Image: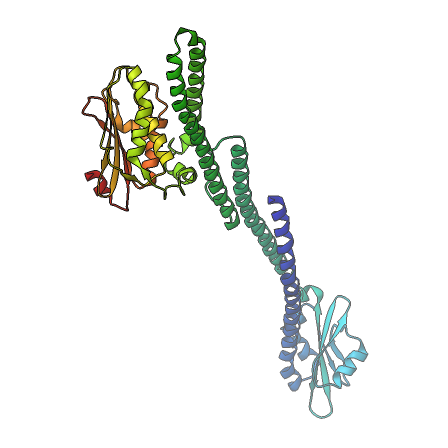
Length: 456
């Protein structure tokens, strides 16, 4: 491209230069010739007063010697009826013709021009002053002027080539960066971004590339989260299956081992799905904002539905109570006697409750007590899951990463946080009255302020 632009600039500038410089060169030559003829006519006019006083050969010779043309032997005076003084080069017929005229005329000869200036004397007498202008005098300064014009043309062409090359380099550099970034993105480097530079068209292309890369990153993050979410939901039926196998006795040991391997595979899938990619690391390693826009469609649209939170909690605690009894875990459900409307579908709320209770059973020892409290406020509904386990060492980090520690994949907290935030609510981690962790899921019923949520 740079070579093409350079050739194009040379061609265009050369044509423009020729269009202007050729006529200018002709004007320069014509001006030089006009100047030389005017100088000859001026010298001839200087001899007119002398002819008015005398036509003597000696007197005219002295007068001619005082002029430049006379000193160089290029001046002659033809007196009618008398002798010719000086070196004459013009043909006699041309001299005779000039004597009959009243204006000066020029005659082209080999090696230059001859100026014939008629002069009327007293009586019928007349004279013709002849001034020879050689070719060198006619073209004096023309070659130097043409050399200057040629130099100007060369400078213009070189300058246009330089400007075209700089412009081409800018375009090529921006295009190469765009191509390199596209290659890197195609090779799997989702962190590749480019700074828009170059012409407006390439800037627009770079901006579109960055938007495309962001979209691809968000979509891949959403797919990973969806895979991890679906895998996490498998834990609930697996837990029920494990409970059933525990009641079958020693003969179900092979099934229990197979179930254990299946749980391990599910954990591996969740961990692999949540492992940050290069794009995620460069983008901050967080899917909070991007996931809300990409994955929100799996929850959005259904958020307008509502359910009875008390009924959901009673149903899920009835399910988990069998495993709690088997492990000797005291539990308590508080505030779920009367119906409480929650601004989310029953299926999504069920998934959150199962995820949080599943975390309690997986990350606390058998015999550890837990409780679930349903809180109904003016603008919010809160579900508080507490346990008497060791708690979460760093609640803020757990909220930021979505992982509570102890080998947790963090999907339970992520599912709860996304559900709460989809209603404008929040997810909080705190120390429970039982001594362990307390996960608070606050769902907003209306467009209440964050202050109302904090005071709830």
